[in-house]
Image 1 (cartoon, rainbow, N blue to C red):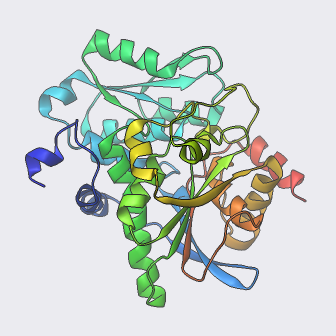
Image 2 (cartoon, helix red, strand yellow):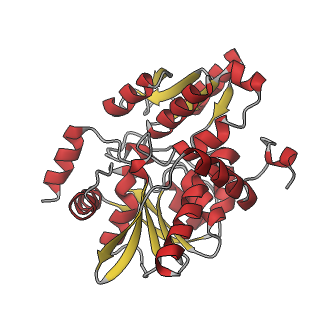
Length: 328
């Protein structure tokens, strides 16, 4: 693809775009560790994205998107929609690039994520997750200001940037074992990370883990058309994966590409948080633990060349303590 094609907002994401994003991310951030974890006699490989500067993988796509804005676009600012991790990624990249950022966030987002987003200099516009549509609110803000929308997952730059997780992990696994990943298990909300991984690692079987009550992407793939979450007020600690529906740009990449997946329960999530804490000595948030939760619960198959995403670690201390206690 030409540079002009790669900068076209109407384009489909591509592996070439993922590789370009990987170069940009590598120039800015050190790679996150790929850590071995023994599960039922097999060693799986955990990509520790909670060790990013904002505590989540979202920084990858956000940097790829914002750093490609023209001077005119930067002057008009950006608008994002997020439960908190994408919010921090946009705010972090915007501050580094001198861009004004407004983030549409649910009023019940974790206080730690709201505070961190504001501390990075972004303006936070709150909405009610159960009764309001965040995409409609964001579209209105964009229409008023002329800002660029930076969607949490329905954007070619975001998908490509998140795919750099796979580029990094594949290189790390090959360096450690001589193997490329043959299975990737990913936490899944709207499908930005999943779609990026599908492009980054075309030879690996892809498995998705979604929270109970929010398994809309797996249901969409099963029936061949996009399905929405039935009840956005359904209780879950996985706020990072609490998205209303996937977008066509994600669905079109994943349709026919996903080998399987599972909905994980609160008990599954709590167990994965405990294992990550006790075995890897890391803090993972509920949504970031979903992929490991599916593995530990025996809901997806693994091999000795399986990569699993630990996609974020932004969790309130009280929630973390409660979930550790729940898994005791």
